[in-house]
Image 1: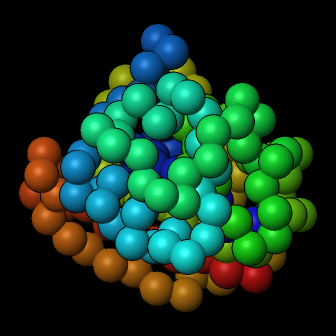
Image 2: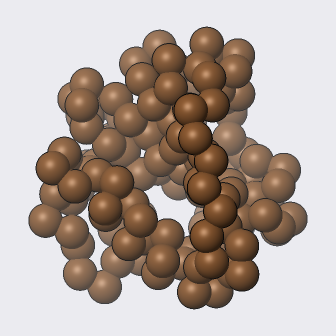
Length: 136
């Protein structure tokens, strides 16, 4: 499976049960990246989209329900139990430090992944966002 997660500079993903940040340009990139594949997410994650992409699939346990070629856009779900199922990890880096109390629980290098590509782009609410694609 292919996992997408947005993190701050400390690996934070949530604070006080809410996402740290969101960005419409990031959502568009996620839609483009997952085009032609199922894009699994929770109802909470889906709430940031004005209209859900055609490939969106809702589940309270998207990491469990996703198939090998599917994408999962996750916010706060633990990845460690699924580390062996991840063929790709897409990290969206906010390039900022936000308050956080839920953090990414896997390091892609420790999961046997290598950094395939990095892309910096301007978001709508952030002047610089980085997208890293890690693969096995």
